[in-house]
Length: 341
Image (cartoon, rainbow, N blue to C red; front, side, top):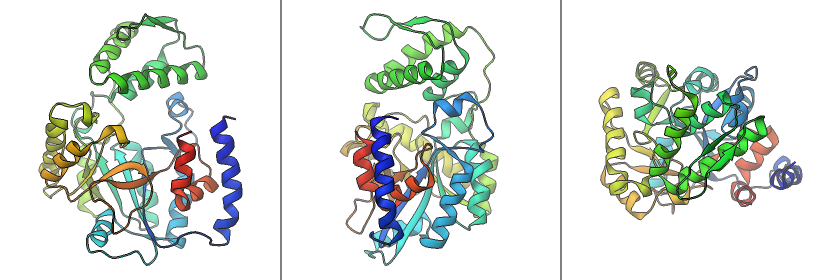
C-alpha cells in the first residue's frame, strides 16, 4: 500500500464516525465529476491502467442512491443560477458532471441517473465525437501500453534516449505516468514527438474507432431531457499552452455543440482542470465567448462568493470504496491535501 493510500485508509476510518453522527457542514454546493465507467466484469487491461478514471458502475449506483436520500440533487444550471442570485445553500446541494464524452457514460451511467431521477451535465470535447478515428493522446498511450511488450527506446526532447520494457502491468503503469508527465510539461510539441515514435514501433495497423459517443445519441438524450451538454474544447488541449490561450478551441467546441443541438451552451469545463491548465487570460476568453460559468478540477465546494469562472468540483476516483466516496463528498478540501502528497 502506498503512503497516500495508507493515509486515505486511516482518514476514511477516522472520519466515518463524524459522518455517521452528522458532524459536517450540511449546507453547501458540491459538484461531482466522473470520467469513465466499467461494469465490474470487464477485464480489459485499459481499465486497470487507468484505474483512477474508471469507476465501477455498481459503486456509482451507490453514490447516486446516497445522494437521492441524503442530499438534494440539482442540475448544474440550477446551482449556477442560485449562486448568481446570491442564495446561500440551505441544504447539501449536489450536481453531477461527466467530462470528455466517453460512450460508457451513456451506456452505463445514464440508466442509473434515470433510475434515481438525477440530471447530469456532460462536458464534451467535440473533435473526438465528430471524428471517431481521432483519439486523445492519453488513450493512444494506453492503447500502445496494452498491445506492446517488446523492449524499445524513445527520444524525448534533448534528453538521452530512454529505454522501456513493458513486461507487466506495473511496467506499463510507470511508462504511462512518465510519458503523461513529459507530454504535459512540453505540450504541445511533445504530443507529436511521442505519438509518431509509438506509431512507428507499432507498425501500420487499421485504426479502430475511439471510445467516445456519437452526436445522434447525444442529441437524443438532450432532446428527452436526460442531460445537458457543456463545452470542453475540440481536442482537450492544455489551454495555457495554446496560441491565443485556446480561443479557437473553446469557440469551435461551443459552436459545434450549439449547431448540433440547436440551443445555447452556457457551461464550460477547463480540460485537465488543474492550476496549470487555465489562467486569467484563459478565463477572460471563456467569459468573452459567452459562457455563464466555468468549472475547474480544483477540489472544493462553491458558495455565493465563488468566482463563476473558477468553480470547484470533486473528482471521484475509481479506486475509492464507498466509504472513501463519502469522505470526499463531506471533507473534500481535507482529502485534497492528501491527494497532493
